[in-house]
Length: 467
Image 1: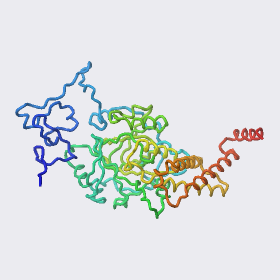
Image 2: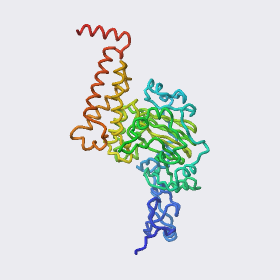
Image 3: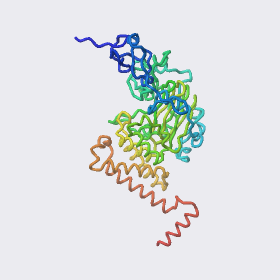
């Protein structure tokens, strides 16, 4: 049996998770950590000489730099890569629009469904104290080691190498060792550890407002052939200088974050049609990692979320996240009825960008069908009681029905039928929902509910004139 090739001064096999550099003299490969070369600085080396070759050929030769007219060294034509130490330094020093211009700051007890209906949940919400949120969390003394205890050392997790902006797999136990190591060779970030099926779930209860609004929480059937989407409880373990680039949360979900320890800085961009178009172009560009998306829009708001604070980000908001100090946080995603159209819009953007299933909301279309049935029942019940549904629900019902029609067209059906629940009669649901929406609109026009008193009078006069 052939022996496994070994490399470097340590004479170990090749390890894809560790940065290596090739000596230009002997052509052997070396771990950066073994020869004192950081991955970021390797780009500055023109010819690398390993410790052995240094004796014969002298030190490594660095790339020449040009000096600008102001006397500052600059890399000729070298773009700054997202997540690199240079990028993080520049990001920390930049000035942004203050989130105070847009965010709301209710207390936990003020954050109710009625509050969100009145304010449409269209801007981020920062709650300074968790009191009144109906949320259960571990104490601030809870640590990353405690996460390991409740989740299990052997749990395989997704980890982001921030400098490379690349994903890799790692056992939780190995990440915890890295987290507490004296010298961290890389900046590793854990943001997708969903723990609903672990013992840690018993220590965390999502905010009451999330439980009230969440489609999955309230409308997903107990008995269902489709797997329940578990996206409600995430543990985020981020070391200093972790950075997540601009994104829209999957399926246009809204998201909540609570910082248990440390701090998170969010860079927030409103989901206007223009900004969403720019975002889609940026996401599909070949040099995305060399362009800071915040520079392409009119307004990018900076929002610092400190220990003990909770942030709610609405549907569709484009955001990036910087971790200025080691941070332990909890969060979760949820779909709801307050902005259905934007959720569907985000889902369509994902499809056009060919987003991998791993990064999409699980069974998104399935939950939409269940919600469609639920909204139909609401409309019927309100009509029987001579009451009108909220305008956001009518608007959302329309958007859903348009999506249902698109998903069930003959040419599109093969790509969508696998997510249609057996209990849903699609043709009948689309027909009934359209009918109820028309009846709501007719009643609203008749009552003049969309107008003020003066407008109502003008509308009645206009009706008389038309008759």
